[in-house]
Length: 112
Length: 116
Image 1 (cartoon, rainbow over the protein chains, first blue to last red):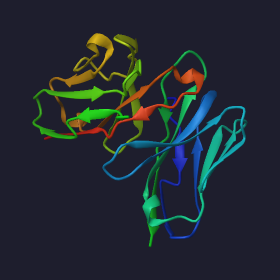
Image 2 (image 1 turned 60 degrees about the vertical axis):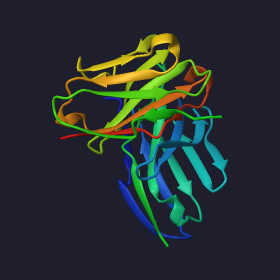
Image 3 (image 1 turned 180 degrees about the vertical axis):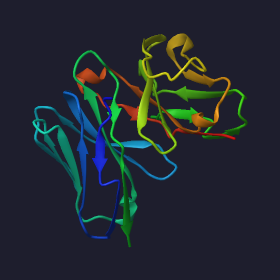
Image 4 (image 1 turned 90 degrees about the horizontal axis):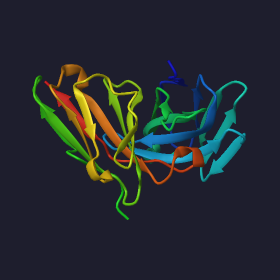
């Protein structure tokens, strides 16, 4: 299976704290992306990091990528209640494929 | 600019019935994808269209699922006959170019299917 894993499966924090989610994948990749899904809603693209990049920032989001360990992490700083959602990493495997493989997701709950 | 739109947003059908999900991609996007998340599990790829052609249908679970994209615009995903394990959310997505060029893929809100 090409599926990867995310941990933790669930994370509960207080507003203002930082949240860190980890993603591990199994194949070589071209790039890795993070998505958010609010309850009952669609997937929203957050950030993309290419395989030759090690770190990327976007607002309160910081993504790291370690291709030697086949892992990525998403850090949300100064969390807000509105950040409550499921977060998924997804990657496009290397080779002639155009599909995304998704991680298992982390359910983040930010308590006000 | 309108995003990826899906219809219906929610559907409840009985086992053995047929359901057809529709997806309208972002205008001008040649690439259209179907994904699904069943039973709270991972989001899994179903298939990929480039215009009206099926580029990759390796994720289609079985022959009860039929996807079409006549004319290369909107797409439909038909489940016939529906089984209990088909319950979940079906996402459609589109992109302007192939993902190899680093383009973002845009997802719709999903069609939430419940088979009872």
